[in-house]
Image 1 (cartoon, rainbow, N blue to C red):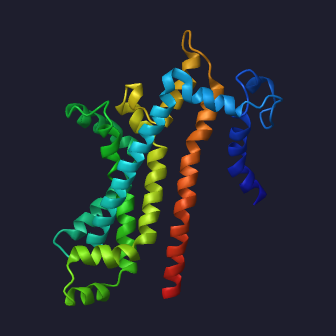
Image 2 (cartoon, helix red, strand yellow):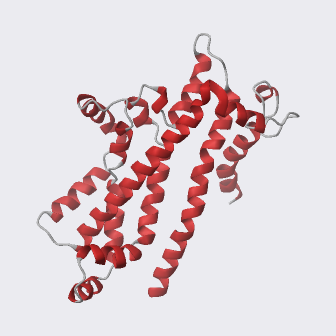
Length: 269
């Protein structure tokens, strides 16, 4: 357990410690402890002012990709998974096979075909090149499908239909509440996946003003190896620390709905 905790928290501790150091003290002091100079506030101020404040633009881009991409992926997965679980229609078995097959295909294998397709459509180097692929979540669809089949009683839906309720009203007033734990789980996975997405924006975007944080910080890290490039490792480390704060806050905020939903399910059993 001690080794596991150390493995998990040591990189975070290293990140916190080294984000308080200047560029010079970063290489002249012990990596796992603070130096004599505490420069966290100065680093954060420089971070948001460097290169005309491009870091704030990257942070806004990442938030845009997460809100539209992850939010849209969760909604589409919820609607699709619920429909597959609770409605009988021709071809449902083939849809199931198609979804299972898509789960086995790694995203990197689809990167080049996706780039060529978006290039022909004129969508590369635009936010849509990152948002549209993020809307597709076979894992989220499969998870909602399985969760809806187990947590939403068909007899409850039939009773609501006999009372005259329409399908949209049944979904938004009854089914969506029963699906809340599964929905939050898919949302959490989608947010983390979109926030950490690196490879897709890297091949789709070449204008720095549309970069997410992952690609932007890597460009800052790589500029030290270019001719005449300025080493700014302290800003890369500080930026990495700032970049993980929103995702930690979102996780802590959403996990209470997750836990409460799981607890409610256990009471029903």
